[in-house]
Amino acid sequence: MKKLSEQLSTLSDRSKKTEDVIDASRAKNRTRLETHKATLKASVAAENAKASTRVADAKAGVESKWQQARIALDARFATMRATAEEHHAERDLKRAEHRADAAEQDAVDAIAFALYVLDQAEYAIVDAAIARADADDLALNS
Image (cartoon, rainbow, N blue to C red; front, side, top):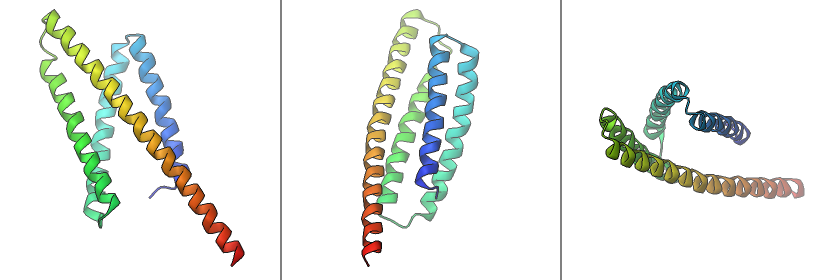
């Protein structure tokens, strides 16, 4: 398991990559977006493989509950991607506009969820730092 500082560094790097995707989206750089989509698809597959390994190794409790949440989210995002890919070939303008609106709403919902999870992660980080400080204080006073 990675240390908290390593995970925070990874989160920072991923945030920067997300900014790059937003820039490509604003510039309507389809090539960059398609390339990034393929990279993300591979990354999601790799993370799912890692998650499957963790599930096999998980003993119980909170770890298992987080894994269940991740599996549910992965299923939702897979459904979103499958729906988008099914309709990609259709060129009817009205349908294309509707699909674009739905895809944008899915992105808004995913970002809202990510922000919620970030708040929860920040809370856990603060809680962990306080718990570590308490443990360190007890060790000094022992």
